[in-house]
Length: 326
Image (tube, rainbow, N blue to C red):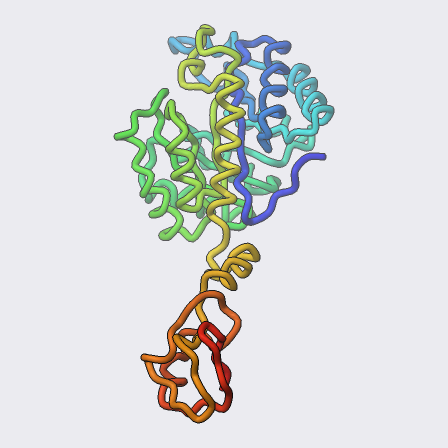
């Protein structure tokens, strides 16, 4: 079954993006990679090149080759259902968003480049169930405006996760600025995550430790493939380890409650101390620091109450190392 989402679990998005190079067979292999690694979503990009860039733009020919047709998108949605992994896409134009909604895709990712495309945000807000919005190249007022636009058009904050990121592929560690994620969380009172374009595991682990609810990472079959994002992406084996590290980080983060675990309670009985007789003590003798001592295990009068024992008269005879009772 597709994994259900809980508040204490990190949603992991495997960003296939355009790393399929326009090949539907390659795209399905990327879905397999995401599923085998344990990701929650596999994400693609939905766009009509003519609606995205001017024909005179140097990116036009490249993007046209990377465009996925509507029929191929339907094929990928069906393949994700078969593989039991959530399909996610980033629409770059209103026509593509309308198509996704028509095909009952209501989990939407908004790219960093579209954060100021307010009409797109308005339309996303009206029907989307989950909204992930990247914030590369943005300042806080721009993010605030985007969130307000989503809120004003029906998308409440509980539907939204704001992803801190840096729009360079790959991102250098000096540019990560992970504490900005916390500023977004604290200032805007929203769930936050991190869209990771670095070449290491540590950034995502640190983000999860700081409270990221979502981690997004580019995947590829090979970093040697030709295309704009392959070099900043993770190959299958490394991505599987990446997911495992995040799941381990979730485990070690635990909860905010400080209390002993079941194992610690058992251990506590062995290593905490009780008040015992330092030597033979006879009935009527006064307990002092010279004839009593605190030793393991727990079970008698706790060592924290030793001072309450001192000065009292013994009602019993005790042999050396007997636990004292009053």
